[in-house]
Structures are given as structure tokens and as C-alpha cells.
Image 1: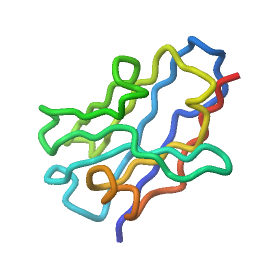
Image 2 (image 1 turned 90 degrees about the vertical axis):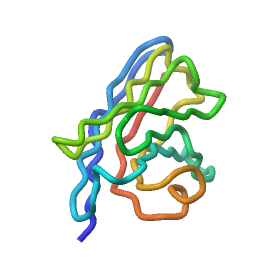
Image 3 (image 1 turned 90 degrees about the horizontal axis):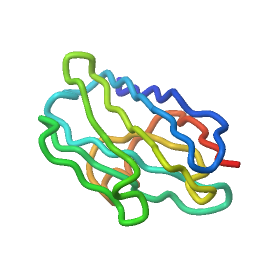
Image 4 (image 1 turned 180 degrees about the horizontal axis):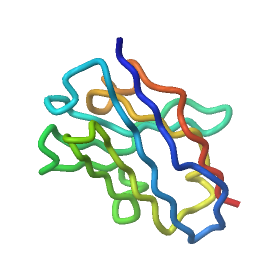
Length: 118
């Protein structure tokens, strides 16, 4: 069965950095486009970033471009999100998900990892 396990969240001050990881299993990870999505408390899910199957191309929503970097290691079935210059509005639960943009937002995701910027 499909499983996604996110980790690396925490409490950080504005301007700080965090590194998130997501280990995937139960599907052909190395062939899958992967995304990170987030959900601020009380708000809707928001697509944050995407990466194509071989890791050569990445995509970002405007609010995080230049501050967040996504990468992947297909040998480890893992996708990463490096968050830098964090802002209070980046606070939320972060999930990884197969697919891009709304496909990822509407699809399967793991339990998430909490990022709090305060």
C-alpha cells in the first residue's frame, strides 16, 4: 500500500531554516512527479513545490520561490524540501504527495510534519 512519511518539522524563528524529508513506499517513486503541499491551521491545502521524476526540473509557488528548494533521491525513495528565510506565513503542516499542483492537493498524502515559524 502507498505510504508517505514526512519528518523534519519544528519550531523556528523568522529568518531561520528547516529541512524536511519524505520517505515513500508502495508505488513507483522513481517514475513519479512529487510535490510538497502545506496546510496552515484553519485554511485550505496549498501546493508549495513540485519536482519531476528524475529531479531535473523543479516548480514553486510564487510565495516560496527563492526561499525553498526541493530535491529527491530516487535510490532512497525520498523527496526533500529545504526551507530558508522562513516567515510566519510559512507556518503549517507540510505533506508530500504524488503528482503536481491540484493533483497532489486532491490525492493521497502522509501524516505531515508541523512547521511553526514564531
